[in-house]
Image 1 (tube, rainbow, N blue to C red):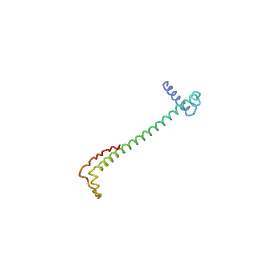
Image 2 (image 1 turned 135 degrees about the horizontal axis):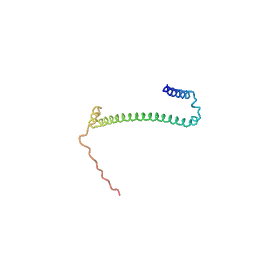
Image 3 (image 1 turned 90 degrees about the vertical axis):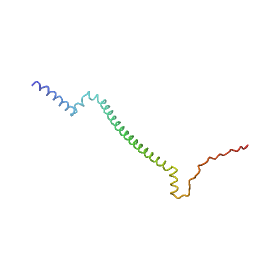
Image 4 (image 1 turned 180 degrees about the vertical axis):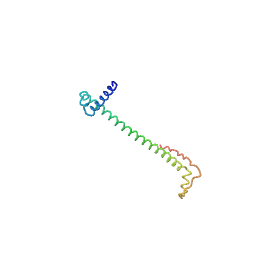
Length: 122
């Protein structure tokens, strides 16, 4: 019987502690009321930290989405550049001129550089 008594007292203290928290008696104590500004400040800091965390995660997701779109656009740009380079080859241009029916012919001799002499006008 001596062993059961401490167990019951411990259980009673827990039940009384729970009753005082749920009943509001704990909040009416002077020591708790004095500490209330500090507790409210800590709650405010916790809410501020949670808000900051959500904001930063949303910003990081936005940055990753923009980086993915940049990668896609770079790949598309390289593909367009390769296609443009292919279209600008002399053989491709000659073929397009022939296909379009223009009466242009490809010159047989290479271009020459013209030299112009300056006249001294005194």
